[in-house]
Length: 102
Image 1 (cartoon, rainbow, N blue to C red):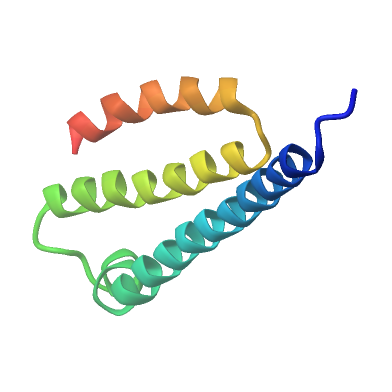
Image 2 (cartoon, rainbow, N blue to C red):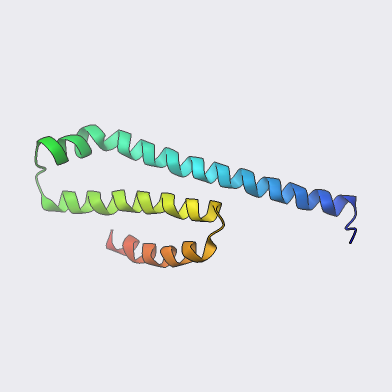
């Protein structure tokens, strides 16, 4: 079936754009992860976990919830990039409950 030059070019453009979007969002999610770990490593991850206790257990709970959410966010982006949309939707439902707990 010949779709015509304009239609074939539009399909090729859409496929290329989708690939570029996946790279963009995967890179942005990874950059967010690096910023969070880098930004909180001196004040929380390294001193709070390894050398000195923090003032409250609630600080640890909140940090664990937020750090876990960042990790799950990266997993979500990876699932979309690999076109595993069923797992993405299932994890999204679990992340909604996770977000409420935060």
